[in-house]
Length: 106
Image (tube, rainbow, N blue to C red; front, side, top):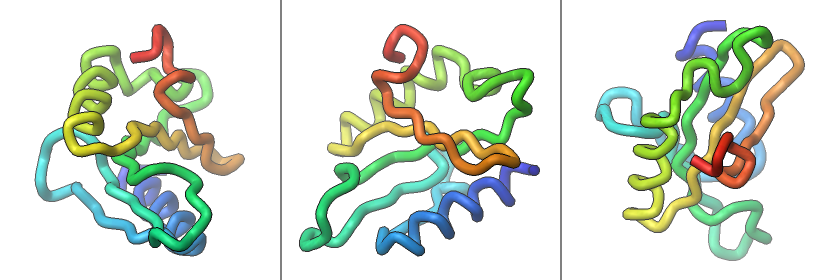
C-alpha cells in the first residue's frame, strides 16, 4: 500500500468514528493528519497529530519513522496541544501507537 492510500484509509477510519479530519499532505512539516473529536463525544484522544506509515511487516512500524522524525512530531504536537500518534497501516488493519509505545518514548 502506498502512502496516499494508507492516509486515506486512516482518515476514513477516523471519519467513520465521528472525527473531524484534515490532511496535512500539501503543507509540509511533521504529521500527515490532524484529527479532533466533537467536544460532546466521549474522548478517544485529545486532538491528535498523526503520522501514517505503511512500511512492510519486516521493517516494522518504525522502519520509516526514525528518532528525529518522532522527536519532530512529538514537539510539533506538544506546541499545538495535540497528542502525537503513529498509525501503522498493514494488510491486517491499523495499529495505533501512542508516544509512550515508541522506542525510548520518542
